[in-house]
Image (tube, rainbow, N blue to C red; front, side, top):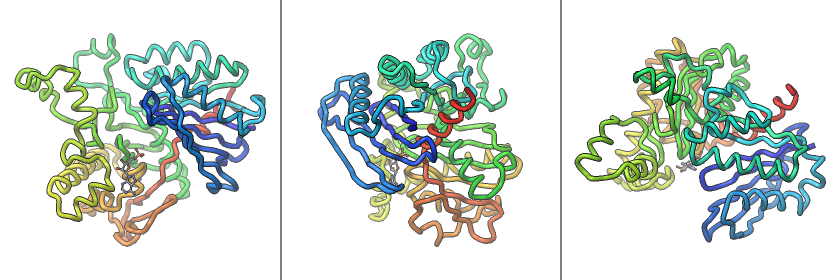
Length: 401
Ligand code: AMP
């Protein structure tokens, strides 16, 4: 039996088909640029844990529904799945579970209604997930589907962490609070850290840094998230590829008064034109590292700001955790940029965070420790695998009924 994982984003559908028995990958891929002439499906086909073949096909798709239909055709045509009866379950990443979902949920009519109710909190992502859920429901009503919420892991935050210092009515009537995102990734990184350190997660205090195009930090006390940097939306917190992260909210009023920008323009500016991109003209760390080597001052400033802001969160989370066992780097930048890891850790020696520059600069392909012998805090690099975590949680949900 097999499990299909669906991770639908704002312009793509990532998928992974795994064996139920050992969660080994059969095929993984992405349908990207939906609605544009560049739309294509790209896949890696696996054999004995290794990529055995690559495939890419261009398709003109005008909607996510067509994307999901194409995916189903693709999986059954080859056939990676010979018969729908061989599919044990489908696990969907759902961005916003609001306050209702503290863990993954078997998809039923009330769960669908709850995902719909949370559309105002994730207007781009939740509708895409609902489309996927509905397409599979229409074609294979007998196959169980599971929703894995990006917000669920952070539902353990106490009110003092998740409430904003705003009038109570904004929370009770409009549900304005910090929810946090990247929960599946933080949870996966925390579980891997516990495995690597040979300790139960419930006995560990960790700071996990998901540094990808989007970026967030989480403070994990005794295995539970007690604070995280993203808020009501994924705009708050760390400086990101193209998102500003924390800024003075009065900048928005100032801009509307003095620049004549409307709210839509400001929203786009903060979500798509800020962060690393806004400061130095690129949101790709590979390009920024190249520019730094050429002495580009804007690129140097962008990385300085990026790392400085991460450092401030580490300091804050160190204080609220009251003791730290591990600092975890994950996602595209966290896994690949030794420059960012080094710059983030430099100066944190008095917290017991001492990086080993040689280990840090080696190529890292699996969960690895990069602290020096004198470090009291373990520094870990953990390659992100949200799809594997989704498959694990889908399986757990099936077993729990
Ligand atoms: P993610 O959102 O986790 O896929 O991360 C994407 C980001 O990771 C890219 O925008 C790059 O900034 C960064 N990245 C990917 N590969 C590398 C690399 N080899 N070196 C430095 N940064 C990288």
